[in-house]
Image (cartoon, rainbow, N blue to C red; front, top):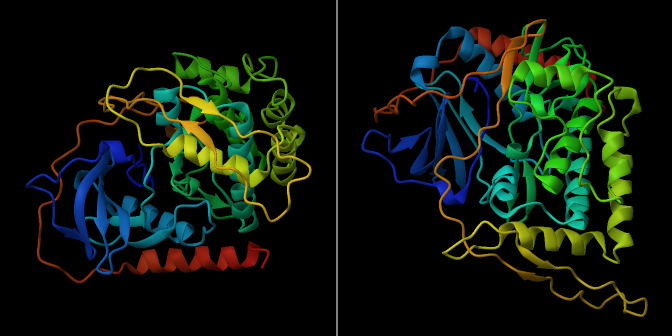
Length: 408
Protein backbone atom coordinates (compact mmCIF):
# COMPACT_ATOMS: atom_id res chain seq x y z
CA UNK A 1 0.00 0.00 0.00
CA UNK A 2 1.34 3.43 -0.90
CA UNK A 3 2.63 5.53 2.00
CA UNK A 4 0.56 8.40 0.69
CA UNK A 5 -2.70 6.56 0.16
CA UNK A 6 -5.48 8.15 2.23
CA UNK A 7 -7.19 4.90 3.08
CA UNK A 8 -9.16 4.92 6.33
CA UNK A 9 -10.41 1.36 6.33
CA UNK A 10 -12.09 0.50 9.62
CA UNK A 11 -13.96 -2.34 11.23
CA UNK A 12 -15.51 -2.23 14.69
CA UNK A 13 -14.60 -5.91 15.16
CA UNK A 14 -10.84 -5.31 14.76
CA UNK A 15 -10.13 -2.52 17.24
CA UNK A 16 -7.35 -3.27 19.70
CA UNK A 17 -5.95 -1.44 22.74
CA UNK A 18 -3.18 1.10 22.38
CA UNK A 19 0.34 -0.14 23.01
CA UNK A 20 2.72 1.63 25.42
CA UNK A 21 4.60 3.01 22.40
CA UNK A 22 1.52 4.68 20.90
CA UNK A 23 1.21 8.45 21.35
CA UNK A 24 -1.67 9.62 23.56
CA UNK A 25 -2.78 12.19 20.98
CA UNK A 26 -2.17 13.30 17.41
CA UNK A 27 -3.09 16.75 16.11
CA UNK A 28 -5.36 17.41 19.08
CA UNK A 29 -7.20 14.08 18.69
CA UNK A 30 -7.04 11.86 21.77
CA UNK A 31 -6.21 8.34 20.62
CA UNK A 32 -8.52 5.64 22.02
CA UNK A 33 -7.64 2.42 20.17
CA UNK A 34 -5.98 0.92 17.13
CA UNK A 35 -8.33 0.19 14.24
CA UNK A 36 -5.95 -0.95 11.52
CA UNK A 37 -2.40 -0.99 10.26
CA UNK A 38 -0.43 -1.82 7.17
CA UNK A 39 2.66 -0.98 5.23
CA UNK A 40 1.88 2.74 5.29
CA UNK A 41 1.50 3.11 9.06
CA UNK A 42 -1.12 2.95 11.79
CA UNK A 43 -4.79 3.98 11.91
CA UNK A 44 -6.25 4.93 15.27
CA UNK A 45 -9.71 5.62 16.63
CA UNK A 46 -9.43 9.19 17.88
CA UNK A 47 -11.67 11.70 19.58
CA UNK A 48 -11.67 15.45 19.13
CA UNK A 49 -11.81 17.83 22.12
CA UNK A 50 -15.53 18.25 21.40
CA UNK A 51 -16.17 14.50 21.40
CA UNK A 52 -16.25 13.76 17.65
CA UNK A 53 -14.82 10.36 16.74
CA UNK A 54 -12.34 10.19 13.89
CA UNK A 55 -10.10 7.76 12.05
CA UNK A 56 -6.60 9.16 12.50
CA UNK A 57 -3.94 7.77 10.21
CA UNK A 58 -0.27 8.26 11.03
CA UNK A 59 2.30 7.65 8.29
CA UNK A 60 5.17 5.33 9.17
CA UNK A 61 8.28 7.44 9.86
CA UNK A 62 10.48 5.20 7.72
CA UNK A 63 8.36 6.08 4.66
CA UNK A 64 8.47 9.85 5.16
CA UNK A 65 10.66 11.92 2.85
CA UNK A 66 10.27 15.22 1.01
CA UNK A 67 8.63 13.60 -2.03
CA UNK A 68 6.11 11.58 -0.02
CA UNK A 69 5.25 14.66 2.06
CA UNK A 70 4.58 16.68 -1.09
CA UNK A 71 2.40 14.01 -2.61
CA UNK A 72 0.56 13.48 0.66
CA UNK A 73 -0.09 17.25 0.81
CA UNK A 74 -1.43 17.18 -2.74
CA UNK A 75 -3.77 14.30 -2.00
CA UNK A 76 -5.06 16.05 1.10
CA UNK A 77 -5.92 19.09 -1.01
CA UNK A 78 -7.94 16.84 -3.31
CA UNK A 79 -9.64 15.16 -0.36
CA UNK A 80 -10.74 18.56 0.96
CA UNK A 81 -12.81 19.08 -2.18
CA UNK A 82 -14.74 15.80 -1.91
CA UNK A 83 -18.09 15.96 -0.14
CA UNK A 84 -21.45 14.18 -0.03
CA UNK A 85 -23.68 12.16 2.28
CA UNK A 86 -22.11 8.90 1.10
CA UNK A 87 -18.49 10.01 1.38
CA UNK A 88 -16.49 9.71 4.60
CA UNK A 89 -15.78 13.34 5.45
CA UNK A 90 -12.35 14.92 5.70
CA UNK A 91 -11.75 16.41 9.15
CA UNK A 92 -8.16 17.62 9.47
CA UNK A 93 -4.60 16.81 8.46
CA UNK A 94 -1.00 18.00 8.68
CA UNK A 95 1.36 16.59 6.03
CA UNK A 96 4.23 18.65 7.51
CA UNK A 97 3.93 17.27 11.05
CA UNK A 98 6.28 14.71 12.57
CA UNK A 99 4.90 12.25 11.60
CA UNK A 100 2.35 13.31 8.92
CA UNK A 101 -1.25 12.51 9.83
CA UNK A 102 -4.76 12.61 8.43
CA UNK A 103 -8.14 12.52 10.22
CA UNK A 104 -11.40 11.54 8.55
CA UNK A 105 -14.90 10.66 9.67
CA UNK A 106 -15.09 7.40 11.61
CA UNK A 107 -17.67 5.03 10.11
CA UNK A 108 -18.70 2.37 12.61
CA UNK A 109 -19.05 -0.70 10.45
CA UNK A 110 -17.31 -3.39 8.42
CA UNK A 111 -16.36 -2.92 4.80
CA UNK A 112 -18.23 -4.73 2.03
CA UNK A 113 -15.42 -7.22 1.46
CA UNK A 114 -15.42 -8.34 5.08
CA UNK A 115 -19.21 -8.58 5.15
CA UNK A 116 -19.42 -10.79 2.07
CA UNK A 117 -16.48 -12.92 3.20
CA UNK A 118 -18.18 -13.50 6.56
CA UNK A 119 -21.85 -13.84 5.61
CA UNK A 120 -21.92 -14.63 1.91
CA UNK A 121 -23.55 -12.79 -1.02
CA UNK A 122 -26.20 -10.13 -0.52
CA UNK A 123 -29.74 -10.64 -1.95
CA UNK A 124 -30.28 -9.19 -5.42
CA UNK A 125 -32.81 -6.51 -4.47
CA UNK A 126 -30.51 -5.23 -1.73
CA UNK A 127 -27.57 -5.19 -4.15
CA UNK A 128 -29.77 -3.05 -6.39
CA UNK A 129 -30.24 -0.71 -3.43
CA UNK A 130 -26.48 -0.65 -2.80
CA UNK A 131 -25.89 0.05 -6.50
CA UNK A 132 -28.36 2.93 -6.62
CA UNK A 133 -26.86 4.48 -3.49
CA UNK A 134 -23.23 4.22 -4.62
CA UNK A 135 -23.96 5.27 -8.21
CA UNK A 136 -25.68 8.41 -6.96
CA UNK A 137 -22.75 9.14 -4.63
CA UNK A 138 -20.19 8.72 -7.40
CA UNK A 139 -22.23 10.88 -9.76
CA UNK A 140 -22.06 13.66 -7.17
CA UNK A 141 -18.29 13.21 -6.91
CA UNK A 142 -18.04 13.48 -10.68
CA UNK A 143 -20.01 16.74 -10.58
CA UNK A 144 -17.22 18.05 -8.37
CA UNK A 145 -14.80 17.35 -11.21
CA UNK A 146 -13.24 14.29 -9.57
CA UNK A 147 -12.77 10.59 -10.30
CA UNK A 148 -12.30 8.01 -7.54
CA UNK A 149 -10.21 5.57 -9.63
CA UNK A 150 -9.89 2.88 -6.94
CA UNK A 151 -13.41 1.86 -5.93
CA UNK A 152 -13.42 -1.70 -4.53
CA UNK A 153 -15.34 -3.67 -1.86
CA UNK A 154 -12.83 -2.73 0.84
CA UNK A 155 -13.48 0.96 0.10
CA UNK A 156 -17.22 0.69 0.81
CA UNK A 157 -17.99 0.92 4.52
CA UNK A 158 -21.36 -0.41 5.71
CA UNK A 159 -22.25 2.01 8.46
CA UNK A 160 -25.38 2.39 10.61
CA UNK A 161 -26.63 5.18 8.34
CA UNK A 162 -25.97 3.30 5.12
CA UNK A 163 -22.90 2.70 2.94
CA UNK A 164 -20.13 5.26 2.59
CA UNK A 165 -17.21 5.49 0.16
CA UNK A 166 -13.66 5.95 1.44
CA UNK A 167 -10.10 6.19 0.12
CA UNK A 168 -9.94 9.09 -2.31
CA UNK A 169 -6.15 8.97 -2.15
CA UNK A 170 -6.03 8.07 -5.86
CA UNK A 171 -8.62 10.66 -6.87
CA UNK A 172 -7.63 13.20 -9.51
CA UNK A 173 -9.32 16.15 -11.12
CA UNK A 174 -11.18 14.81 -14.13
CA UNK A 175 -9.86 15.92 -17.52
CA UNK A 176 -7.40 18.39 -16.00
CA UNK A 177 -3.66 18.74 -16.37
CA UNK A 178 -3.16 17.97 -12.68
CA UNK A 179 -2.18 14.45 -11.79
CA UNK A 180 -0.85 13.00 -8.58
CA UNK A 181 0.93 10.17 -10.34
CA UNK A 182 3.81 9.94 -12.74
CA UNK A 183 3.12 9.48 -16.46
CA UNK A 184 2.95 5.97 -17.91
CA UNK A 185 1.81 4.40 -14.64
CA UNK A 186 -1.06 2.14 -13.68
CA UNK A 187 -2.77 2.98 -10.40
CA UNK A 188 -5.63 1.05 -8.79
CA UNK A 189 -6.79 -2.43 -7.87
CA UNK A 190 -6.54 -4.87 -10.82
CA UNK A 191 -9.65 -6.93 -10.00
CA UNK A 192 -11.86 -3.81 -10.14
CA UNK A 193 -9.89 -1.90 -12.76
CA UNK A 194 -11.41 -0.83 -16.08
CA UNK A 195 -9.59 -2.08 -19.21
CA UNK A 196 -8.46 1.40 -20.27
CA UNK A 197 -7.13 2.08 -16.78
CA UNK A 198 -5.24 -1.23 -16.76
CA UNK A 199 -3.83 -0.37 -20.17
CA UNK A 200 -2.46 2.97 -18.97
CA UNK A 201 -4.78 5.08 -21.14
CA UNK A 202 -4.94 8.75 -20.13
CA UNK A 203 -6.86 10.86 -19.48
CA UNK A 204 -9.37 8.62 -17.75
CA UNK A 205 -13.09 9.39 -17.75
CA UNK A 206 -16.07 8.84 -15.48
CA UNK A 207 -16.53 5.45 -17.14
CA UNK A 208 -13.71 3.97 -15.02
CA UNK A 209 -15.78 4.48 -11.86
CA UNK A 210 -18.86 2.98 -13.55
CA UNK A 211 -16.82 -0.13 -14.36
CA UNK A 212 -15.40 -0.36 -10.83
CA UNK A 213 -18.89 -0.04 -9.36
CA UNK A 214 -20.04 -2.92 -11.57
CA UNK A 215 -17.15 -5.03 -10.24
CA UNK A 216 -18.03 -4.12 -6.64
CA UNK A 217 -21.68 -5.07 -7.13
CA UNK A 218 -20.73 -8.34 -8.84
CA UNK A 219 -18.66 -9.17 -5.75
CA UNK A 220 -21.60 -8.29 -3.48
CA UNK A 221 -23.83 -10.64 -5.49
CA UNK A 222 -21.48 -13.59 -5.97
CA UNK A 223 -18.34 -13.14 -3.87
CA UNK A 224 -16.34 -13.06 -7.13
CA UNK A 225 -14.78 -10.38 -9.34
CA UNK A 226 -15.22 -10.01 -13.12
CA UNK A 227 -11.73 -11.44 -13.64
CA UNK A 228 -9.65 -13.48 -11.22
CA UNK A 229 -6.21 -15.04 -11.59
CA UNK A 230 -3.42 -16.08 -9.26
CA UNK A 231 -0.84 -14.18 -11.31
CA UNK A 232 -1.28 -10.41 -11.66
CA UNK A 233 0.18 -10.39 -15.19
CA UNK A 234 -2.41 -12.96 -16.27
CA UNK A 235 -5.07 -10.86 -14.57
CA UNK A 236 -3.99 -7.74 -16.46
CA UNK A 237 -4.13 -9.69 -19.73
CA UNK A 238 -7.66 -10.90 -18.99
CA UNK A 239 -8.86 -7.40 -18.10
CA UNK A 240 -7.39 -5.75 -21.19
CA UNK A 241 -8.28 -8.51 -23.69
CA UNK A 242 -11.48 -7.50 -25.56
CA UNK A 243 -12.14 -11.15 -26.41
CA UNK A 244 -12.28 -12.24 -22.74
CA UNK A 245 -15.70 -11.33 -21.32
CA UNK A 246 -16.23 -10.81 -17.58
CA UNK A 247 -17.49 -13.80 -15.60
CA UNK A 248 -21.14 -13.07 -14.74
CA UNK A 249 -21.98 -16.61 -13.64
CA UNK A 250 -24.56 -16.62 -10.87
CA UNK A 251 -25.88 -13.10 -11.52
CA UNK A 252 -29.72 -13.01 -11.39
CA UNK A 253 -31.45 -12.33 -14.69
CA UNK A 254 -32.88 -9.05 -13.43
CA UNK A 255 -29.39 -7.64 -12.77
CA UNK A 256 -27.41 -9.29 -15.54
CA UNK A 257 -28.06 -6.65 -18.28
CA UNK A 258 -27.10 -3.64 -16.15
CA UNK A 259 -23.96 -5.29 -14.76
CA UNK A 260 -22.92 -6.47 -18.22
CA UNK A 261 -23.24 -2.90 -19.53
CA UNK A 262 -21.29 -1.45 -16.58
CA UNK A 263 -18.52 -3.98 -17.22
CA UNK A 264 -18.37 -3.35 -20.97
CA UNK A 265 -14.84 -3.43 -22.37
CA UNK A 266 -15.18 -0.09 -24.16
CA UNK A 267 -15.72 2.98 -22.00
CA UNK A 268 -18.17 4.45 -24.51
CA UNK A 269 -20.45 1.41 -24.13
CA UNK A 270 -20.92 1.84 -20.36
CA UNK A 271 -23.99 3.65 -19.02
CA UNK A 272 -23.85 6.97 -17.20
CA UNK A 273 -24.20 6.76 -13.43
CA UNK A 274 -27.56 8.61 -13.34
CA UNK A 275 -28.95 6.00 -15.76
CA UNK A 276 -27.52 3.26 -13.51
CA UNK A 277 -29.49 4.72 -10.60
CA UNK A 278 -32.69 4.56 -12.66
CA UNK A 279 -32.04 0.95 -13.71
CA UNK A 280 -31.52 -0.20 -10.12
CA UNK A 281 -34.57 1.74 -8.96
CA UNK A 282 -36.64 -0.15 -11.53
CA UNK A 283 -35.38 -3.47 -10.14
CA UNK A 284 -36.23 -2.42 -6.57
CA UNK A 285 -39.74 -1.31 -7.52
CA UNK A 286 -40.30 -4.55 -9.46
CA UNK A 287 -39.96 -6.29 -6.08
CA UNK A 288 -42.81 -4.16 -4.75
CA UNK A 289 -40.48 -2.10 -2.57
CA UNK A 290 -39.85 1.58 -2.31
CA UNK A 291 -36.25 2.74 -2.60
CA UNK A 292 -36.22 3.91 1.02
CA UNK A 293 -37.56 0.54 2.19
CA UNK A 294 -34.83 -1.33 0.31
CA UNK A 295 -32.16 0.92 1.76
CA UNK A 296 -33.46 0.35 5.30
CA UNK A 297 -33.37 -3.40 4.76
CA UNK A 298 -29.82 -3.20 3.35
CA UNK A 299 -28.70 -1.27 6.41
CA UNK A 300 -30.47 -3.73 8.73
CA UNK A 301 -28.70 -6.63 7.01
CA UNK A 302 -25.23 -5.13 7.00
CA UNK A 303 -25.20 -3.60 10.50
CA UNK A 304 -26.94 -6.32 12.54
CA UNK A 305 -24.81 -7.13 15.58
CA UNK A 306 -23.72 -10.77 15.37
CA UNK A 307 -23.86 -13.13 18.36
CA UNK A 308 -21.10 -15.47 19.58
CA UNK A 309 -20.70 -18.93 18.04
CA UNK A 310 -20.73 -17.85 14.40
CA UNK A 311 -20.72 -20.54 11.70
CA UNK A 312 -19.91 -19.51 8.13
CA UNK A 313 -23.44 -19.49 6.78
CA UNK A 314 -25.36 -16.89 4.84
CA UNK A 315 -27.67 -14.63 6.86
CA UNK A 316 -31.42 -15.24 6.81
CA UNK A 317 -33.27 -12.32 5.28
CA UNK A 318 -37.01 -11.93 4.95
CA UNK A 319 -37.80 -9.08 2.60
CA UNK A 320 -40.76 -6.79 3.07
CA UNK A 321 -43.94 -7.81 1.21
CA UNK A 322 -45.03 -5.70 -1.76
CA UNK A 323 -46.61 -2.40 -0.84
CA UNK A 324 -50.44 -2.69 -1.22
CA UNK A 325 -51.92 -0.28 -3.73
CA UNK A 326 -54.51 0.88 -1.18
CA UNK A 327 -51.90 1.76 1.45
CA UNK A 328 -52.48 5.36 2.53
CA UNK A 329 -49.50 7.55 1.55
CA UNK A 330 -49.07 8.67 5.15
CA UNK A 331 -48.95 5.15 6.58
CA UNK A 332 -45.51 4.18 7.82
CA UNK A 333 -44.04 1.14 6.04
CA UNK A 334 -43.72 -2.04 8.08
CA UNK A 335 -40.41 -2.61 9.85
CA UNK A 336 -37.92 -4.80 7.96
CA UNK A 337 -37.96 -8.40 9.03
CA UNK A 338 -34.36 -9.46 9.38
CA UNK A 339 -33.01 -12.39 11.36
CA UNK A 340 -29.28 -11.79 11.97
CA UNK A 341 -26.84 -14.69 11.79
CA UNK A 342 -24.69 -15.78 14.72
CA UNK A 343 -21.50 -13.83 15.31
CA UNK A 344 -18.25 -14.53 13.47
CA UNK A 345 -15.04 -15.15 15.29
CA UNK A 346 -12.61 -12.22 14.97
CA UNK A 347 -11.00 -12.14 11.56
CA UNK A 348 -7.31 -12.56 12.37
CA UNK A 349 -6.15 -12.66 8.75
CA UNK A 350 -8.58 -11.10 6.28
CA UNK A 351 -8.29 -12.00 2.64
CA UNK A 352 -5.76 -9.78 0.92
CA UNK A 353 -6.93 -7.71 -2.02
CA UNK A 354 -3.88 -6.86 -4.11
CA UNK A 355 -3.48 -3.21 -4.97
CA UNK A 356 -1.15 -1.99 -7.68
CA UNK A 357 0.06 1.56 -7.29
CA UNK A 358 2.59 3.41 -9.43
CA UNK A 359 3.41 0.42 -11.64
CA UNK A 360 4.75 1.10 -15.16
CA UNK A 361 1.98 0.41 -17.65
CA UNK A 362 4.23 -1.57 -19.97
CA UNK A 363 5.23 -4.10 -17.32
CA UNK A 364 2.61 -4.17 -14.55
CA UNK A 365 3.65 -5.92 -11.38
CA UNK A 366 1.79 -6.45 -8.14
CA UNK A 367 2.28 -4.25 -5.15
CA UNK A 368 4.10 -5.90 -2.32
CA UNK A 369 2.07 -7.11 0.60
CA UNK A 370 2.39 -4.81 3.58
CA UNK A 371 5.46 -5.64 5.63
CA UNK A 372 5.69 -5.71 9.40
CA UNK A 373 4.62 -2.38 10.77
CA UNK A 374 7.36 -0.42 12.46
CA UNK A 375 7.01 0.75 16.03
CA UNK A 376 4.44 3.57 16.25
CA UNK A 377 5.84 7.00 17.02
CA UNK A 378 6.36 7.66 20.70
CA UNK A 379 4.64 10.49 22.47
CA UNK A 380 6.39 13.83 22.15
CA UNK A 381 5.65 17.37 23.33
CA UNK A 382 3.34 19.39 21.02
CA UNK A 383 5.23 21.32 18.39
CA UNK A 384 4.28 23.98 15.91
CA UNK A 385 3.60 22.39 12.48
CA UNK A 386 6.10 23.19 9.74
CA UNK A 387 4.63 24.72 6.63
CA UNK A 388 6.34 23.83 3.36
CA UNK A 389 6.39 26.62 0.77
CA UNK A 390 6.44 23.98 -1.98
CA UNK A 391 3.38 22.26 -0.52
CA UNK A 392 1.51 25.57 -0.30
CA UNK A 393 2.36 26.42 -3.90
CA UNK A 394 1.24 22.98 -5.09
CA UNK A 395 -1.98 23.27 -3.09
CA UNK A 396 -2.68 26.68 -4.67
CA UNK A 397 -2.12 25.24 -8.16
CA UNK A 398 -4.55 22.41 -7.43
CA UNK A 399 -7.18 24.84 -6.13
CA UNK A 400 -6.82 27.04 -9.24
CA UNK A 401 -7.12 23.99 -11.51
CA UNK A 402 -10.16 22.79 -9.63
CA UNK A 403 -11.82 26.22 -9.78
CA UNK A 404 -11.31 26.34 -13.54
CA UNK A 405 -12.75 22.86 -14.10
CA UNK A 406 -15.53 22.72 -11.50
CA UNK A 407 -19.10 23.15 -12.88
CA UNK A 408 -20.02 25.68 -10.19
